[in-house]
Length: 496
Image (cartoon, rainbow, N blue to C red):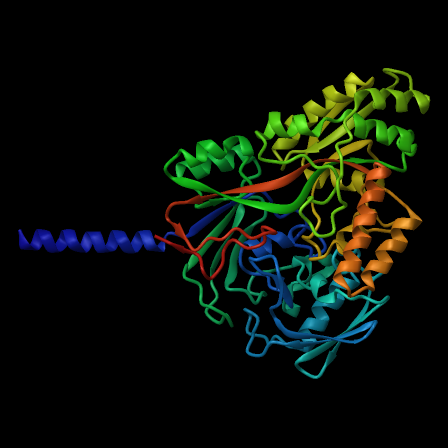
């Protein structure tokens, strides 16, 4: 009996050890689609995996803080000097120094595709000054440079990561708490703790990021315990997950807006009356209540009303009678305008929003069809202007922790991500003025003017502000929702 007890006790110890060794599994909504190009959204997988780090970062309180840098000094209107953190090494053993940082950012600056957070129209050069300082020269005065360097796209990798044609090999080439051990670009990746990490040592030895594109599948994996953290659970699944006894929902109000992008350069949408008619036809309050149970508040402009830079007292624009009148004024007869609405499948809610908008447009005499496809397949048409209307979920602080980055990228005449193909000299002048202004109150007032102008011009139709819902297993400890949804496999994360 004593022998049996010892064997049983040993079995329990081994079982407990095996349980502790289980990797933490994150079910992500994205997959690697552009060979990890730093100018693509693949970079967000690198931050989710705990591998990518930049010179600055957005902390869990939504504040900007130095990270791989220790200080930022504004030397002249167009020149910044950055002091680098000491004691950091890349996971391949090469030194993190000024030469590596200059190489990394210069590669980003001169890539075939412009990075939204680091475009050559704003940034001129990056130069090493000794071993622990870099100098960044901008093409125009820039008061908020550290905010640009907190973007995942400006993460610093070792020189060996950069391959011909813009492809990136992240394996062993980051500085973060986790090292990417293997990658299947369609299925997911595995990570292990970085033993040479400069900061807090990870509490979890191994992790896995699975690419689960279907939102309902991610919700099922959360309820079954197959995934420890499931990203972007649909609002309609929140109650089911909370009632499962396996996982709970972690909710975050994000600086993200779901919008209907209108191709401003294509006829008849180049007529502001037609765009405003589409704007007036859409009842976003009804969409919020019917499709999201009020969990996603309706958007009356691109910014949340609680943002310091949001225009004041914005009113709903829904008015089908006004929509019909505007169409008639523009010479568009009822039933004569036929449009295609693009909804990418990575956002499960787009299918239902598209169906609702289709009916609302029909009510004012606009006929429409819906095209569903993966985002990567439709992005070339969006960028080239080969579309009518398209849904987009856009985080206006994700590229830069200041609206200037988003506004410049998405709504300036030469913006690198101007899917609306909107061009207003007035807006361009306001963006340029804001970028050079280091007075927050004055800069925010300029952003409010821009947002009002975008609303008045119906450059896009803002639908709802996005709250995100991540499902977290009861065995996970130390998880905190990040305001930009950047960090999941962190040193603080542990598993029971």
